[in-house]
Picture (spheres, one colour):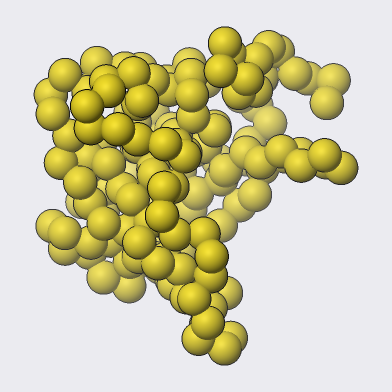
Length: 157
């Protein structure tokens, strides 16, 4: 990828932010859906096609930030403030347009890399869970409180 800027000390790619297609969030309604002071842990992902549970639940976390940024973390330890260092996260962006919650996540495979755009409808949103439904699956996220000291980080993308 010729637009690669650098890698963090944790091996995560950082590059020109113009690669993603989402424009900065202008809709304050998005903050009725997500809370930038919380952590979202995927609890289940169920295929709409056949009802099977997908194998991506467990240690995958989303941390939303201001300016429509989201970090995708694969390890979180409530006893280690550095576990939410954005330099350890995969890059993502989000927006809320026409009652649709849109997330673009950067992914990297040996053959190719780029942004994967997912469009969701809000299936259910409570203080404990956020359920997002796409055309392929339903993702259920458990919303976790974070101690204030974990909220010191700003994303580096």
